[in-house]
Length: 475
Image (cartoon, rainbow, N blue to C red; front, side):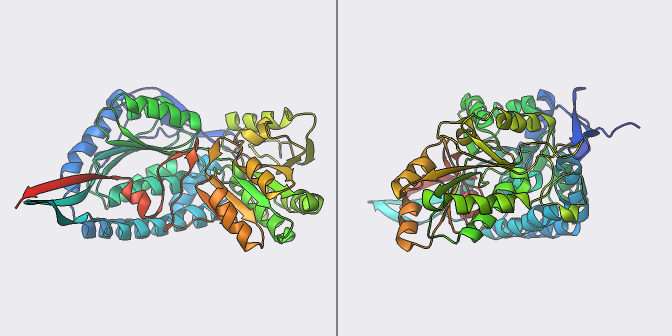
């Protein structure tokens, strides 16, 4: 049986890529190829950017209210097509169907409605006279054409996080999904084609080479990426040739700091779920646990018990908490770093494949690690939790902040003064207190250090897709 050859979406139409090169799209539940993704080349990228540039001339003149109404219509249409989106994404990610529906499609539509409202909140600064005989005003304008590259861990949700604020601010978009997970983006394009004017949203399929063509292209005024630190660093270097702005949401290594005065059972249950959710393929996952030494055994025993209750594998979805890792290369990476753990560490549970086929990996907990061990310092992006002990508040802060990533963190305690101190001193873009991983559209998401810069979600996320212009007039 011949496999479908996927197509780009440019200027309101699906068209074949101009190259013959393709990439296998694999269902990670079965390890079977389900589609062929084109590796778009320079002609495809040029065509997409040309279409977006042409569409921008009229799209930039739409009023915020007009953009709001289109985005609200789009959100409704996405919910109405939830089944199509869920099935398309499941083929590429292996995620549980209800997880995709609830956490990506329904939540994504809600987030898009927030961006629709935020379109009407953007404004400049009222005019004023700051020099005799001269009047000044500040305009907040769309950047123009933006290039966007989204990852494979939450394909649809990351698309919404990128496309929503860009369109709300008045930009036009060229988006590239991961070559591993293109199909939910294709369904989005089909739905959007009935609502958005041609050229406002364009979809280019391909691998990292296609992404490099996008980020080094002279047309976009901004290129945004959610991905690895290496991908972000490469993108920034490529964009620098044209002095193009970049927006980067990169890796994470989130600490979950548990104090002796915390509700130990609640902390163990919450951290287990937040570390294993989506197979640990989440840059905010609570995979680096720091626990006060006096309660380390009690907490670790509870954590292992809760982790072991979270099932995966080729089993009925209603019995599973999470699905497979996304692809063979990533599975091998997770398996390798666990197998090569240092001799001084202790494998408390997991550490092995589940089932004979599919990229399923058992929920894993490892203790006895040192701060400079790879398992502590590197983003694993899998269902692997590490446990370290600390003896004081200062010790906890040093361990928590002692990594290159700075995206998210959590603290588990009943001490209000400690909460205030750690909220100030944890060097992360988000600090959760007695919880870990919830996000809302109204609040910003983004990190510091090697986790990148720029914000997703919130009004700040929309502002990142705008530019500031000063206008001065003689009176």
